[in-house]
Length: 373
Image 1 (cartoon, rainbow, N blue to C red):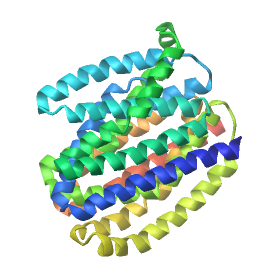
Image 2 (image 1 turned 180 degrees about the vertical axis):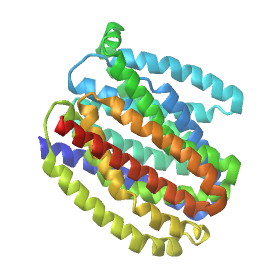
Image 3 (image 1 turned 90 degrees about the horizontal axis):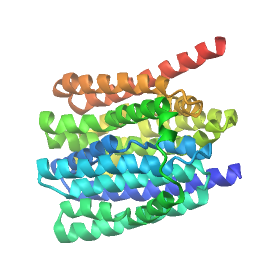
């Protein structure tokens, strides 16, 4: 069951992330950095709406589904209310409904996947993720050639329809019971705050860079982050696999050690090989070469941070992870404002590495102190 489950998650995420990465790399190859940066900015707004709306965040849903607590429908309702309000606000402020619709897709996608992982339905998770990735490429590319870059957003939003069907089915399986929230409010609130701050770490930089430093710099920076995401893919798979087992009190120390070793190898390959890939495939994004080399260093501390986060969240000690993410988002925001105008994408790359290293060191120290006590 363990190996089969890991294989299912790994297959879905490797193939799915591979499809997504190739899609965005293709989009980058046919656009200039400014246009690519504009798309990333719009997606960043949709991600921000999702973060605010996702009260039943992924970690809480995974942990409680693993513990067989029938809380899904209650959290779904809470997230649905906030998502509806967010959709109205975004449509009024930006005069664009596509971003709000995409944010709804993000919320549904995250909620459904979290429940499936918590229930250890790894095969179903794999099939659903894979289908969404295929649909996203087909629909986004198809609509891009009809409506230009804005068709991409509608295509991505429509790709979440299969998840919406499962979302509705899961909602009908359990009763709405707010007493389940009351008795677990501390963990849920901490996780919501943690999810918000962690998500801001990956979103706020784009929201700051576009108006302050321009779409060209954001385009180069976003391509570098896309490469970093690909390098972190293996670690992300391990996190999704470990969290439900950590929540059930099962240890997987051997997998953790192997994961760190593989992350070191990936970091070395990123430093030595990826700059040549940029020269070959993305000549317009020459400013991203050095940034990608720098960000590759962050793969190792990023992996360590992920492994410790899974451990603490499995024990429902979300406050520790929350503090880590809160400091990270503040540091990243300040770093973008200070280093971005002076050092450009290279400075932003170092800020990302520093933030990832801080998270790893802090969680390691806390874990060691808890062992001593």
